[in-house]
Length: 429
Image (cartoon, rainbow, N blue to C red; front, top):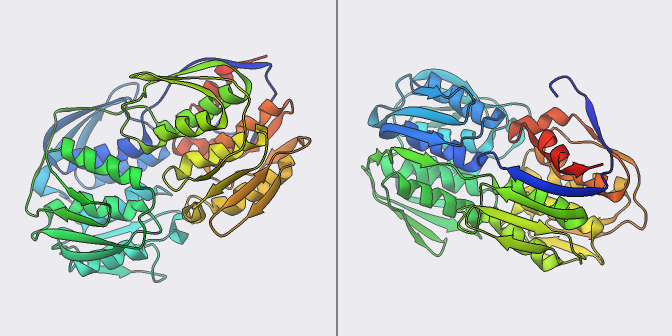
């Protein structure tokens, strides 16, 4: 996979089998940071060892955190430094295109006086950071843009004290996640007031539940006001299990819905803390047969029909719905997904462009996508825009009886390095 410029996926006769999901990327990076700033040793089980996680681990190492990875890279013992974090204060942290790592580290590193520069790759330098920086400055943090205003790279000199903060919530939930993680460490009590409508609310639920596991309670008043006591100390839960990645499950569930066979997904179930578990409900609404167990999900093929839904709550998994719509009867409308435009690429434009290649009729709006299934599927090469989710969701096009070529397949290493081998294990030729 490392040297391949493209991968050709031939059309299988059927999709059938069982998958054991890798750990959630969102949960892994939150858990790593919370463990680092906690008092005590934490054993994290079922971590995802992907590019985004490697960037976080490398940053924590540079910041003075000691950790030990198991031989298979699924268990991490991390030795938290509590109030001593960070130990090193004059650094440049390169974080690739890992949005969660960039935003949460910037916020946490704004607590203590230091001279730390945070930067990323070409795409990360185009992704928004302004609203988070504005919020941190309201809490007296000292942050400097080093090149272009409102974008990376930035330098933080610390001094975040908390207090009353107004945050634009309409672009990315990662800004609020970052503030929620850092605010308990600030000197003052903090109240965060959300301006506009908060996007991707389930990701905030993940953050608050995880923070609670590390000993701190955050009050959430209808996603409009968040209240956090200052001068607190995170305490290690000793052990923390990272559930399977719900976004990653979406590709295999849709494959079963389109061309099953039954597929069983292990490592995630009805008690998941991830919002993308709701993807299974959307598939069910489209007609798929779904069964949710405690630690698994099963999906079986059925006749699929188009839907019209607001998918702001599951923006990543909504991309898989867009592909599933190619195999459904009638048109599908995916609404309220403006934040697709500020992800790893402009996903609204990218999805629209590549779906048209496949043969679908597409209307791209500012914050919506209308998809009419192809009368006839084309054999296509899919440009991935160096976006892992483009590569994974467009792999499902092979279920059309036409092969599909995925360019730059190694981009999946960002969150799911074993995706193609797992996908091929379900394909029956």
